[in-house]
Image (cartoon, rainbow, N blue to C red; front, top):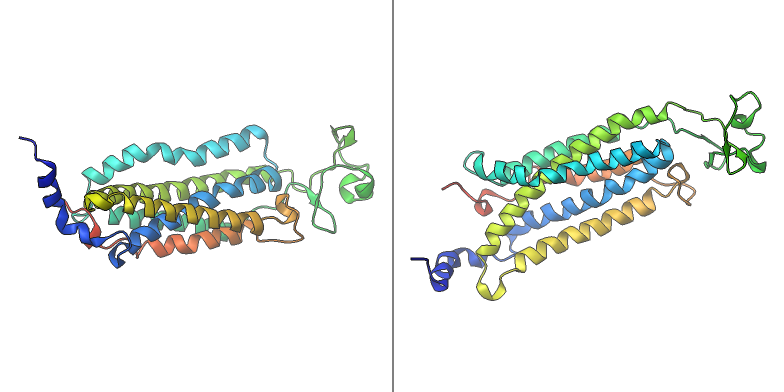
Length: 275
């Protein structure tokens, strides 16, 4: 005989007092906040880095974006892994710690590795010289010795200063892929834990935990949009500010909270132990 609603409530009631904002769930809220920071901020850097700084062809830019979104397709498989392969009797917290460790390491590698020199030459103001129009006609990139510059809208294109810049997009893409895979792994584990805790809420307030964690994620995404939008608005990434943060600095900013999440994942008391 299927259990009645009252029976289910009696089974779940002992853990209902945890509450979505209790100290023991603060780690879960932080998980979603940092997921928002990295998932909102890292993709936002792609246009400035790949489209402007490295000047990769359009098809490469599209493939790069698709590859960095690919880990989200693994959510079902990661969820099955978490459910069926517990670590030390726990299904969620170890995978959160592992995911954030991978993500933080990849972001640190991006911050430490550095980008190659930009594709285009820059003028004295830091803006790229892409065409040999009047203000740039005397720039070294526009001297007559360049190899048959192509035309852009009727204007001769300037010669690049680093024609091999696009070749540096490969390792950047793969590190961004690894970082995305890491935080997706942590996000899937957090979703599983959120669903478990949500079922333990009183029926009168059920859904509070879910709405709270997703609010935290949206706040993180808004914060990362501000960081990238204002921080990477310098001329090297096609922005209008006189200067700004480098891509490496932004990756370091994202790496710090990601690494902080590894040792501060929700404690075992909130995890879902194996039966």
